[in-house]
Image 1 (cartoon, one colour):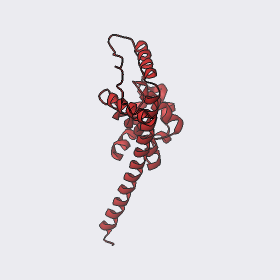
Image 2: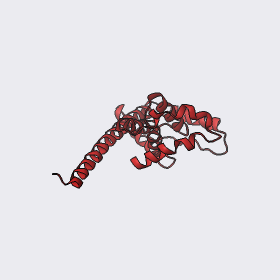
Image 3: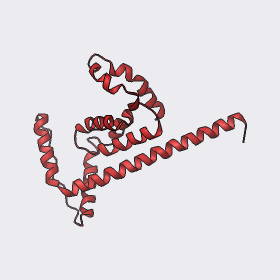
Amino acid sequence: MQTFLRRASNYRHQLLYRPGLGWLGRWLDQPAYWTLNRRKVARGVALGLFAGLLPGPPKRLSTLMLALCLKVNLPAALLATLYSNPLTILPIYFLAYSCGLLLLGDPAAGTMSQPPAWAEQDLWQWGQQVLDWLLALGWPLLLGLLVFGLTLSTLGYLAVMLGWRCAVVRHWKNRKAARGSC
């Protein structure tokens, strides 16, 4: 993963200064957004896991904006949002809804209403229908998404910090063994 992030970091100059994206280059080509240290990458993963629960396409844009405000690793934050996609978002939302029902004290695991279909609608109409659908689900979904988001981001942060630490210790041991000292 570190090799992939390093390649993405080196590729940023070619990506950000293309003719269509040149106007973004001056804002996104800051070293703080591409630095590979464990704290910035862990915070980026935590942010991406939390923001990945937002519905629809705005999750990447909101992740980008939050990453710019919080100055976390940008590729890690955007890559971490990929766990929620059209195949996984409905099961995640159903689990969040059920978790919210349990946390609110309603043991009856109700069924969710059918989400709106994209069928020949423009983005604005579909967005309005998704918003109406989410508001109809109410507090159980909101509480469940908040709990899931905080849990996922905490676990992601701890996993990156622990994994990075284990990789550094393993690298130290390999260097020590290569030198022949015990």
